[in-house]
Image 1 (tube, rainbow, N blue to C red):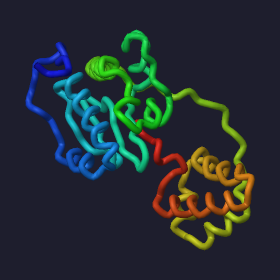
Image 2 (image 1 turned 180 degrees about the horizontal axis):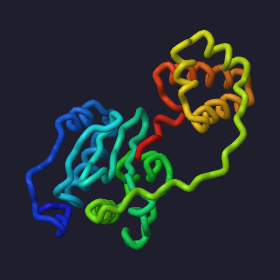
Image 3 (image 1 turned 90 degrees about the horizontal axis):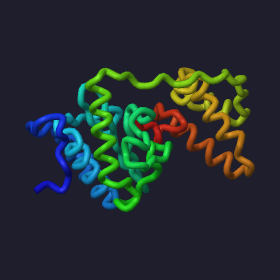
Length: 217
C-alpha cells in the first residue's frame, strides 16, 4: 500500500511526469535531492491528475492551472503554492500554518524542516479544488506609492560602465529599482557597499531583480 493516501476527488490516472524535472533533481545538490523527491511524491499523491512542467527555470505542478512549485538553491530549497493566501489556512491543515516567506515555507535545508506530510497533502488537495472551481489568485493589496529614491553616485557610475546592466535597470518597475537602491544605501560600511555594488551589477547584467532567488510562486 502507498505511504501517501490517494485523493478521492479523482481516480488514478497515468503519470504526468516531466523528464526535465528528473534532470533538475539529479542536478541539485545532494542535500536537496531527497527534499525535492519527497515533495514531488506528495504533490502526486495529493492530486493524481497533476501535470509537471518547468516554468521560470523551476519545477511547477499544474492541474487546471498552477498548483505549486519547488526549487533548489545553493544552500536551501523552496516550496510554495500559487494561491498561497487561499490554500494555507489553519482549517485546511489541521492547525499547522506555514511561514509566509520565500515560497511560504522559509529556507528548507532538510526533510525535517518540511511541514507534516498530512498538511502538505491537504494543501495540495485544496489547491486543486480551487483551480477546479475556477477561483482566481487573490489580488495584491495596493500600497501607497513611495517617493522615488535617487540612486547613489557610485551606482550611477557603475551603470554607465555597463550598458547591459543599465538597460535592465531602466526597464525595471519603480519597486524593483527601489529594492536595489535601498540595498546599496543601507550598507553601513564602504566594504559592504562595494560588495553589494558588484553583486548588483552582476545580477542586472543577467537581467535579474534584487530578490530573484525568492520569486517562487
